[in-house]
Amino acid sequence: MIAIDESFAPIAPRSLKDEFIERFEALILSGKFSPGERVPSERDLGVLFGISRPVVHEGLRTLESRGLVTIESRKGVRVNDYRREGSIEMLLSMLNYAGGRLSPSLLDGILEMRLLFEVETARLAARRRREDNLAALRESIECERTILASSRAAPSRAASSREIAALDFEFHISIAIASGNEIYPLLMNSFRRIYRDILESFYSDQSVVEPVFAYHERIVAAIAACDEAEARKVMLELLSYSEENLRRILVG
Picture 1 (cartoon, one colour):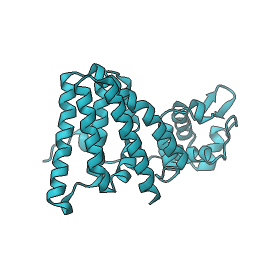
Picture 2 (tube, helix red, strand yellow):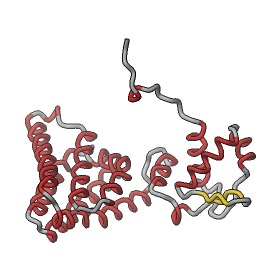
Picture 3 (cartoon, one colour):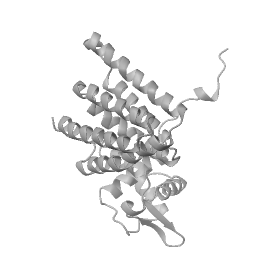
Picture 4 (cartoon, helix red, strand yellow):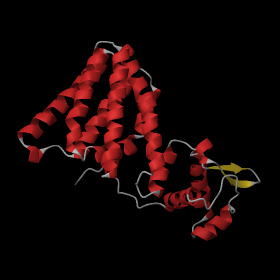
C-alpha cells in the first residue's frame, strides 16, 4: 500500500476560471476593452464565454486584485489603465499574451529597471552584508569556477544555458538578500520567470559566460571589502556589458 500525502495530489486540469482570466486579459491587452470602458454584465459575460456566472464573478475578482478592472457596486465593472493600476503580475500576463516573447518596449523597460534596481542592491550589500551573505556569494563563485573548469576540460559537456541562467539568478538574489532590504528579494522573485527566460537567451552564447563570471568575482570582492562605490561601479559595468551583448544575441 503506497502512502499518499498532499504533495502527490492529482494534477488538476486547467480551470474555467483560469481560462476566463487569460482570455479577458487578452481582450484588454489587445485594446478590445479600453481604459474606462464598462464591460458586459457578469450574466452576459457568462453567456459570451459559455461559463457560469459564479466563474465569471471569481475571475473578475482576480482581475481586480491585479489592477486590471474595478468592480463598482451597482455600476458594474470598469476597465483600468493597467499602466497606472496594474500589479507586477501584469508582466506575466503581457508575456502570456505575446506567446512568451518579449516586445522591444518590454525588454527596454526590464533592462532599465534592472539598471536602477541592481546597482543599488550591490551598493547596499557592500554596506550591510553579514558573514552568511558572503558565504552564499562565495558559494556561487565556487560553482561558477567549477563550471568554467569543466567547460575548459570538456567543451562538449559544458553546462547548459538553463543551468547557467539558474546559477546567475541565484547570485543576484543573494546580493538582494545581502542588501538587508526585505523588499528587494521579493521584487526580484516577482521577475524570476522573466529574468530566467532572458538569461537563458543570453547564455545561449557561451562566449559571455567567462566575462560575466569575472564581473561576479569583482562584485563579491567589493562587497566583502565593504566598498560601496566599487560594488556599484562593477555592477553597472556588468549590466552594461550584459545589455550590449543581449541585444546582439537577440538580433542575431
